[in-house]
Image 1 (cartoon, rainbow, N blue to C red):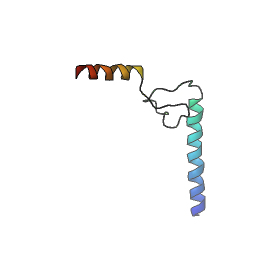
Image 2: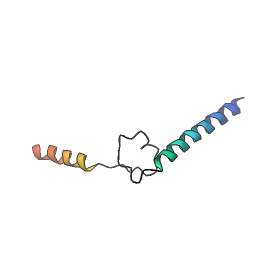
Image 3: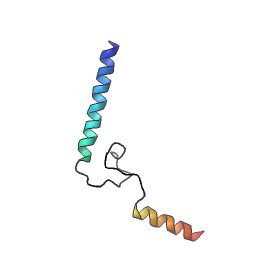
Image 4: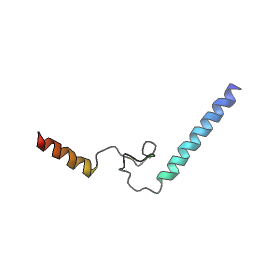
Length: 63
């Protein structure tokens, strides 16, 4: 019975990962850190956007 529960958990987990993978197929370059699929997206690259970069430069200039 325990093996059946583990098997169901693995299958459901893989189906969820497949769903996220299929959602990310249409995205060419994922730079949106607020995207709910970015954690699972194979195209997502951590980094800062141009807006965040400009904001940081403004803060540094104020110092």
